[in-house]
Length: 207
Image: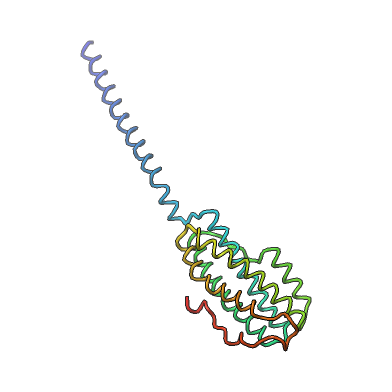
């Protein structure tokens, strides 16, 4: 009877050792999994709130500029305004394409429409024609690009994600060139405007 008891005790001890070893393995595995999680999060394209906000606002700006540029071709009779508008369409369409590629790689859904403020500006522009349209369009472009330059400069200075930051660095000079272009234009009736804008080259083509 004593031998049977000893055998049972030995078997119980072995089972306990096996269970303890299995538990330790599971705990070590869980610890490594927790350590790996930050890298996995980075690989899945997790972004800071600031980077994500920048992408959203930048795309809304792109959409607004493209829409306003297309409207300028219909509502304006001034060739300089139309030329500048075409630069807006070309450059911001290019920026939108690049930004959407980054967003896709990081599983970020970008907006499909401009922000409400720019939608209101578009509505106001759509009710104007000729020189009245030109004056309102130029003023809105100045205001829009002042905000865009500030947005991009902030991302250049404080952006965390390397891809989003690189996009901002490459795009900022073009946005700044747009602002200077509209600041140099007069809002007086057409005929008082200069025609230097026809020599403006698309900065995004150099990206």
